[in-house]
Image (cartoon, rainbow, N blue to C red):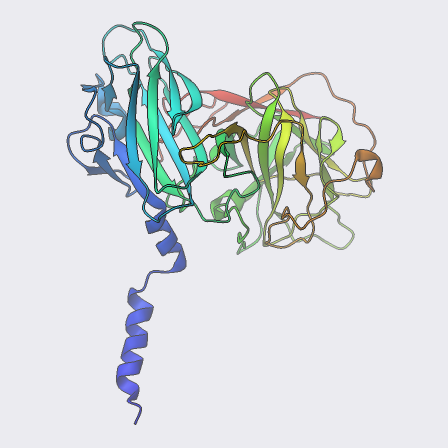
Length: 451
């Protein structure tokens, strides 16, 4: 005979002690946080456990940054490499092959050697060129990449570039992403290098635990042409492929004047490269009868999406994968001719697609060539991936319906603060003002323009 009491007790235990899906994702996403040069493990104000690097590398010397009391503990020490042209960290990635990983390497010179001579050196991911790191005396530089670790491990290397300029590392972080996240590029032979990740209207950076994957979203300084509008929705469904945090959608930005366009450029290289953009939207108000907030995404005047209206209470994402872009590429949100309300946007990500050969990418072919654009338009206004491969490709501008007339640019450019390449990871120690000072971090603006 079925005994009800033990079964009921078991259900209660499962209810109270099993982690929620979010908690499980949070715990599994934080693969490791390495405090280079540290002697002891520690836990920061966000609850992230940091471990010393001594068990991961046998070369280099540990150094301490002077006057370190005012900076986060993970930036107070570093490991510098006075010998060997290339020095590498070999990092294990639990979970087996084909794990989608975010890796972040952070560098704070802080005049540790008393020479006031911050070095420039190269950074490699699995022996592939990742970035050139240009450090500064009192600024943090952070480089971030997303890639598929197909061997259950990866390596991060610093490579001396100029004689007498010694490479160093302050911190390395690994985060496991969902299998479906950032899936619209060739993972077998490419990686995504972060150029921009920003959220509109937030007062301080958004990261773990609000983002369980510990991506760092920097605020947009909404002034001189933009205004912040608060979201009226009491709950927001963010269940789309790239899993943006709900904190990004508590507000949005929209033009503060009689304008039908928001535009921006991203901190990409000056020459055209293969780029990857994610744009995130939600309707911030319960629209009245007759109200219409419909707009399109344009790149340098060419339509890259069908007209769409952001949903209220959920989010949509427009992605543009492998498009040819540079620091002068202008992305704009333009209202359709029948719209009664201006565009809104809640968050932006921009990446450079770089080739990987062997190593974590496991491939051998080059990344897709710039120019083979793969932009995907919106479809249904619901919390779903609106840029899935099953969607129709974007239409040429001449085939778009409800396209607005050609816009005339008003003289002047409005500059707004934004985070580049993950910029400094300082918990809640972020100051936001018209000058947009992010802790002691590097300042790289994104530019918004209005029509």
